[in-house]
Image (cartoon, rainbow, N blue to C red; front, side):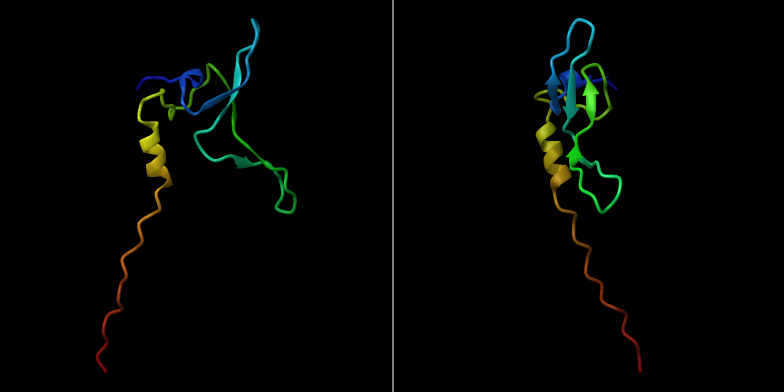
Amino acid sequence: MIKIFCKDCIFWDITHRGSLTKAREGRCRRHAPTPVSETMDEDAGTIWPATFDDDWCGEGRLHGEGANEDILIDLAPAPKPEKQTPPKRDL
């Protein structure tokens, strides 16, 4: 398995360009953002995971590597279960 770093991933969005002593920072957009609030009665919004350019997760995709097909498969509705009829009972 090839390790794809965040900086090379199609899902990574740079938020801070970095400096000589600090790596570039960004947000991973691979999955939907997660809620931030600690309790159900408050709404603090949502966030995408913050990562550095040299982080990696195992789900990264290089540009032009077919990421669009994977997204469409992930977003496809689940198949409906087959309708089952109850067994007939003799009276």
